[in-house]
Length: 214
Image (cartoon, rainbow, N blue to C red; front, side, top):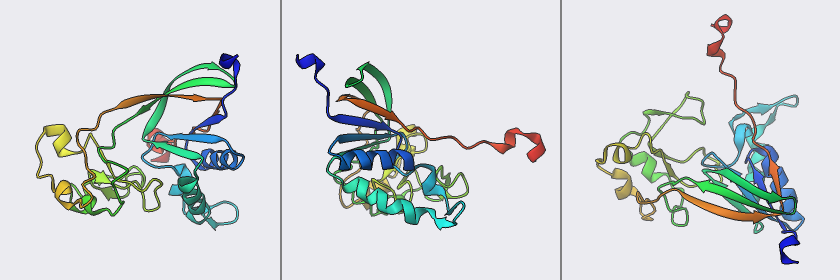
């Protein structure tokens, strides 16, 4: 019966190094892979590291080729800035509901040049999540230099136009690709897969919560 047929696709939830490697292995084996990542780009914690223990190898040197391969692989579809909100079915045949938040940037048009970020009136004023608050970014930005996908994204909580309805919109003027789209809205997709791999990663501990650490 058609209802009992297994689906030859896999969803990997989490775009860190574990999720990326799982996606690449599955894609090479011939499976269609949906790689879901809540951040604006895949890479996870490893993209934030300088060196890896115990060999002191350059973290991004190891990760970057995998990012490129993942972004170019025909069997992998990256769903960044998205999250799984529903799952039903059984092994071999799942229906997964994925919520894709708006980037306010058309990823088909965006070239990743960064001109929009340079032109933003808030450039250098917003703490960067990727840099753990040590660096600053604009309201429209590229997550990190080697980001995959290397596409701009608008922070809806910082953008003056989205929060107040008024702005000089210098980013629109700077974007020669006409990729910025403030009309984008949240959308949900139902994707059928045969299996789901969970690779959600981890959150860093905030030492400020412990007084003994100052």
